Length: 293
Image (cartoon, rainbow, N blue to C red; front, side, top):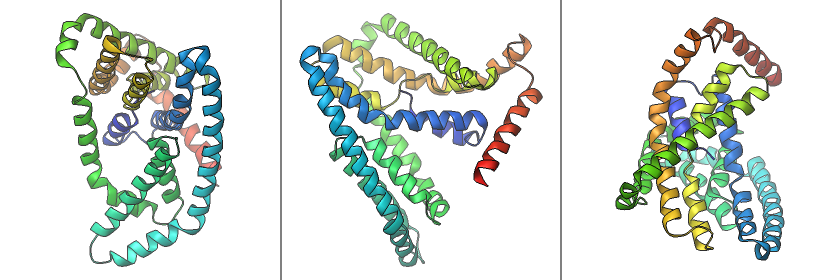
């Protein structure tokens, strides 16, 4: 899995979230986030024969819970959410703080309910965003939560730092660096090949691959759950934590290298010139326009 929080932040800062490669990246990240609950259900299967039956039962419960959760979310989207946001708009006519708190509280409540049902926090947050996006207050809500986004990003990055065992990683720095390089190369290759297989240009596929090259923040939660059921322990656990954290740290470097790599690719005739790939963007925009109509 890749990091939704880090990658989307960079896409928005570079105004690339509405570009062709940005839409492919965001769609892939959302699909990965929705699969977190399934990954949790599959963890017991990795314990061997004793965990296969438990894993199958967990998966069945997960699918049933997910169906009920989405059904309830659909009802809330139709009846409760528009009225709730409209009421908050009226109450916060003089100040925006109340609306900001209400929007954040709604998303946190959805994430909490999803987690308590055995799904994932990110799936609940995603469902909350979808419910708000279907209302007429979607753009206003997005504008209101924008200022506090950096606060949550800072909390996320600081929490990652507190998980790292610096002395152990320094002792095994050679293995750590080799692991990170392997992760970046393999994930870039796999993501680029799959994107290319769906008919996108080599340029777009390469940008998608590099952007998804890191290990996402939810790997920390999966590793913690795997450690609790004694799948990963000791030095391997610490090494995987370090690899995940360092791959996240390399993401800003990779994003800064993308323009230089694309320029090198054009010079080496790996990628077509920019004006050629613009045709792909025009076709993509025309397709989105037809779907909208």
